[in-house]
Amino acid sequence: MDHSHIIDQLPYAEPFLFVDELIAVDENGAKGNYTFCKDSYFYKGHFKDFPVTPGVILTECCAQIGLVCLGIFLLGPEASKGVEIGLSSTQMEFLLPVFPNEKVSVSSQKIYFRFNKLKCSVKMHNSQGKLVCKGEISGMLKTHTYA
Amino acid sequence: MEEETKYNKLKDIIKVYLPEDVSVDAIGLESNFISELNINSANLVDIVLDVEDEFDIMLENADMDKMQTVKDALGIIDAKLEAK
Image (cartoon, one colour):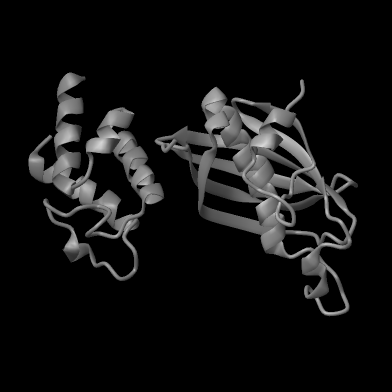
């Protein structure tokens, strides 16, 4: 199934879009991937002379694929009006570094979606299938209430 | 369940989500969750989910909208328990 309409509805753009492909999404979770381009701006400073993808960026990638793509799916056709998102909490553990040009895949499992709050467990794996980071992310999501 | 017991149970739930600069003593019947207790909307959802577990009830979106103060929450809990 083609999920490109969900990616089109994401409220992000370069240089802060961290979703290339959404492979699967259903009521219970989402799965997608992203390749960190070696020219990304954050590699210039993280770290000096030793580029490693910052943990906050890995968290953001997990949130965009695991939480926001899933949220747009759960909101259904209403989401085409545009979505308002507020990240409310993250709790992450990082196990392996992600270097420039690495492709990662993110999968999420819904814990609950109630009263506009979506809470998910997320996992990111590298191209060798090794776990890079995992955790829980929550956010408030709703469709635009204004015209 | 007595009113006093319900109130104490609710207080125990709320205190977990209070920001560090708000003390447990600040919780009163008339306290507004968001404007007085400084609880954000995401944590208010957590309070509602904990209330559902504690009292074995289920809240709807409309209940959530009505739940502005501690007293409102007690009223909703009462109504749900009665309807069971």
